[in-house]
Image 1 (cartoon, rainbow, N blue to C red):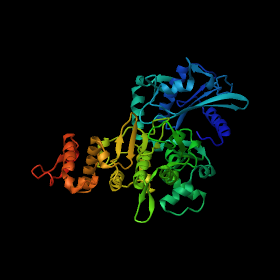
Image 2: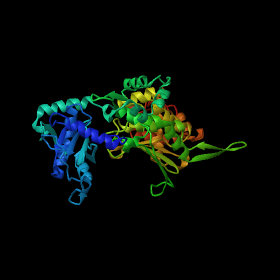
Image 3: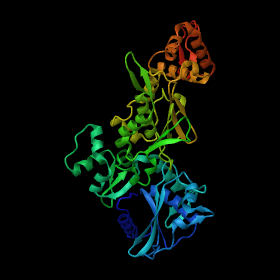
Length: 489
């Protein structure tokens, strides 16, 4: 739920929920607190039932009588409740799988104290509490597995839904939309003139599914609209943890953080500034020319841009409490995002990308922020070779995807694995550009003198032994042989 107008908005929301003719499967009214376990069951059931009823979230309202919807007030204080020695909210979050966003709000309505629990709808798969998935049947919370027809319908709807379609803020007026979303940047990035008048602007935003009409009146902002064009991501409770963090460290470890910046804008609105921050905070190299010294970037600008865009687009938004992170060290750059990769990291360069967030990826392509045909990693590797840097590394730490760029290192200082990895990436790049890797091309990649062709031959032999490259023409002499990445044979 949005922060602006919070007290008035929440009071109006409670009024709308009370005006419902009876308790529904996506709203639960309670006079007072019962137990931590019951709240966990409510969260699971409401997250799942919200999907079944096409709602962006479900609600529990304490301080309202169940049958009459009369305000009676409540003495429930969520922040004061514990399970054992653990505060209620983190205890609940720990036992929900997958994690789902939920928020307690305390307010006063017509002189009565009310607590509102808002639960975001499930995405990708049903939400379970303590290993059990729940659903609302009438006014009761039941185990989902005991209602197979509901379970089948829920899975069907979850498979058809996407993160981008979710609602980040609801029931806003036209002026609220224009104050909350950076619509001038939207039109600027598309390269089209700003429409004349508020209604024309709102129509254009709705056409690209950045906003949608709310059945109760006004507009909703979709997750797509908020994550790309929020003037302030912090105004969206479900998305504020998705802001990009940039951290600059002294040295090669994470013990000494020199500075840190968290992105405040949506990804599209803030992309240019974000890339500028990274480039400004990245060390540069001093090169001595014939007459002058000059500063050159440590890492290719195109590589930074493409890897940052990839991290934003391909993250798993269902992973709560974590967002993209860019970490800058003295001699390396690491860019990570929540979510394990959908394709093998060894195939990043040649395989067409698969995105969890296709609507997000599609719009960012139209905004010229990311590549149209999935050639971004090709550009990264080509730029790294042009800068004579060690090959980029793509990794899968648990629950995340990480790309690493390294500062220049002389060939003689590279270890065996670094040389083999660079050889493999070179073979991939040559293949996707309709060329073959040879002893000659590898010598050029590493800056090895022609007279030391045997050094390149040893690297090629090691890469073959590791199963990363194969010989395309075994009958040819060592210097004339062509090599392919293992997946191209």
